[in-house]
Amino acid sequence: MRVMVMIKGHGADEDKIAPTQEMLAQMGAYNEELVKAGIMLAGEGLKPSAAGAKVVFEGGTTSVVDGPFTESKEIIAGYWIWQVASLEEAVEWAKRCPNDPKYGVTATLEIRPLFEMEDFGAELTPELREREEKLAAEIKAQHGEG
Image 1 (tube, rainbow, N blue to C red):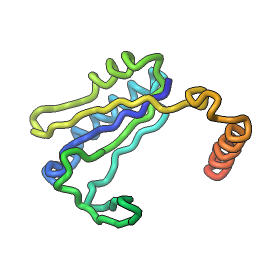
Image 2: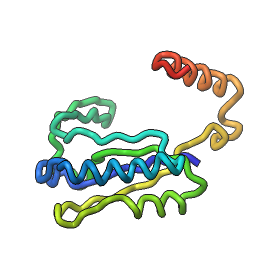
Image 3: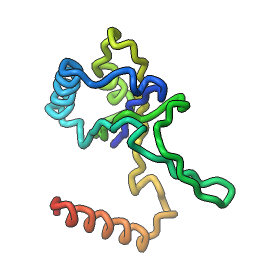
């Protein structure tokens, strides 16, 4: 089972802390554990919301909101994609994530299973499956993984 683990924080906390050498070393060691265990497929930290934008679709209109999103109760600060046997295994790994209270920042790891093609049943017709597989192959070819 593949899961996405989202590192969530509060928008108002974004500018309170910049990554320190110690924080980067702790997270690097944790990522090494994930890689050695064969769990980590991908993962990145995200720049603060001040560097981003939101595209909002509402009532048939589209609008763009530039960051920062300090009013947001939750922002995604980073993510991992893990391959695990179960949600319980993902939770156990998440509980091991570095979290030093001296920085005074509250964070939440949200774990969500990714859809696999088999999850769609008969709704994913052979034609739609073939289309998705072609797109996946094209993505790999474009990025030198094919």
